[in-house]
Length: 135
Image 1 (cartoon, rainbow, N blue to C red):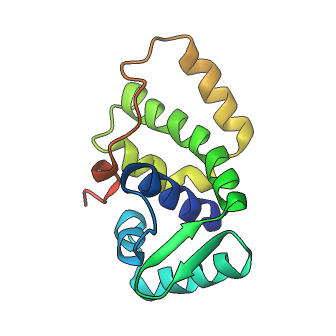
Image 2 (image 1 turned 30 degrees about the vertical axis):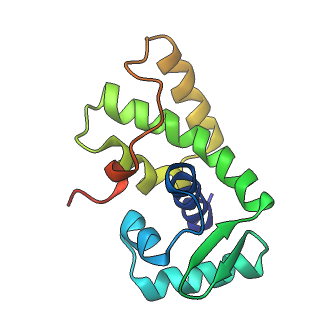
C-alpha cells in the first residue's frame, strides 16, 4: 500500500461526508501535506485514471479510485477501532488515516479478528472533523 491509497481514502471519507469535488486544501489539511504536494499527487492520480480534477474546484474519485478507497476504508475502520478501544488514543481517526497505507491486509485482518472478540463501542462512521491533525 502506498501514499496513493491514503489520498484516495481521504477523498472517499470527504466525499461520503460533504460530497464532491474534494477541494485540494481539504486534502492538504486531512493529510497534513502542503498544497503543492497535494496538487502534484492529484495530477498523478488523474493520470492514472483514479480521479478527475477541475482546477480551483477539486478532485472527484472515479469508479476505479472509489474501489481502491473502499478496500482501504475497511482497514481504516479496523485501525480506528483498535486505536480507540485498545490504545485509547486521543485522535484515533487521524492516527488511522496517517498509517492506513502502511498496514498490510494480513495485519488488518488479524486486528479485525482480534477486535471481533470484543464488542464495539460504536459502529458508526468516523467524524470527518476528527481527521484533521490535532497537533
